[in-house]
Length: 44
Image 1 (cartoon, rainbow, N blue to C red):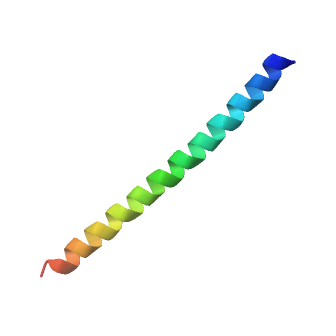
Image 2 (cartoon, rainbow, N blue to C red):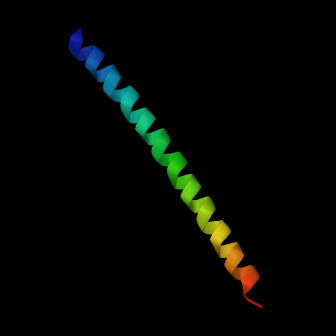
């Protein structure tokens, strides 16, 4: 019983972690695109 509970908690934790990581990577990629666009605007 306790081991099953632990497994569930572990899975939930991993899902949360993956969600946080994916959102972070999305943010960073968006920022990169923004920076690239800004640089292109600066260049003639």
